[in-house]
Image 1 (cartoon, rainbow, N blue to C red):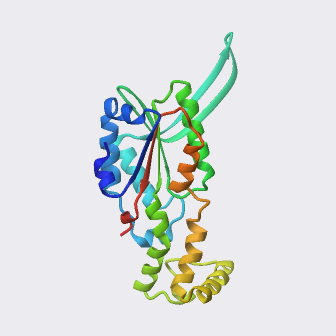
Image 2: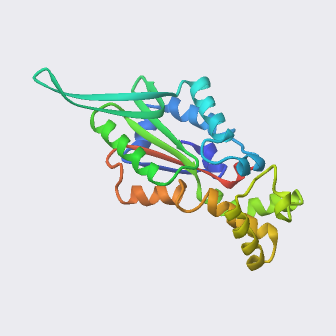
Image 3: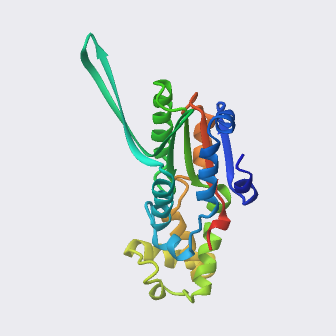
Length: 240
């Protein structure tokens, strides 16, 4: 299961019998996800231009929704007592697909604030407890990608001759605060490229954003338990 993704450096984690469900009941889901993710690439220019819902995320969403039918869905759960509605809760999931043996709910957290993981996992837990979904999945930045971001940005700066503030546009337009931080970091880190990469990655893709380590921390604490979960982390080699 997901052998092609694993060979290409993707991190794959299944929890709470998710592997058995995917293997025996949702082989088509595995094939569709592998087809979309194995072809995913993001040019460094996009990485630098984009933040949360950037071009890369939009391409992934279109591939899942338009090509394979994983569409946004709002689950509404109502509590009725003696014919009277007492409570109504809705859970919007970005990608949902119903298979013959069950329903798969999937979220892409490319670059949000890390509390979004809590929201996703708790939503999956509630929907699974209510018998609405069979499995929940989250796709995010893997450890190799997160740990390589500064190196990727430094290489981009050197390849494009970005060695001063004025050379940053149109790729990236820093605020006055960022300009001050870049200039300070350039002095302490020995080069403009290193200083810019440090400030840029800290601002755009810092530790408090959605990436593999933050997700793993939560599932280790039991967030989302006992919903079956599939977690996938993008490797650094998707950046071209």
